Image (cartoon, rainbow, N blue to C red):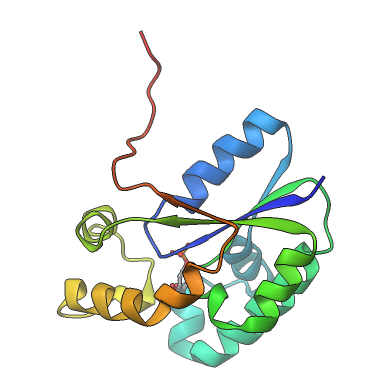
Length: 159
Ligand code: S3P
């Protein structure tokens, strides 16, 4: 069985959906950002601030290489993982790539109270979201499956 790898922009639901999926399948859930934070003993914000984005991207690639060797795991990746061809080749080798998408408005709303995302710490967040989405669109759409989560709400039971 191949791993399930969730890609997609910040705020598209990779962590929430990944955890549910892992739970349903009784598989392990791994989050590349979490692994990076644990390993560096720093938050993603601190890594970006103190060491820079390219340092972060290098560790991210190392972590991607490790998780792509795991079996029966649901992997949530950081939104920028798709930018490196090698990351995606490694993840696809042993996994099905599912890209989650959402409209800029929904992404803006879901990330509004979030201080954890260094790339969105900017005056005009909406503009930044649109700019990054546009730049990354071709990479996100290379996935095996693309699912729009714009209309998805957190499930709170049916009754
Ligand atoms: C990033 C997304 C973040 C995190 C880092 C960079 C990106 O992960 O990896 O802040 O470049 O889009 P999430 O997509 O889980 O927020």
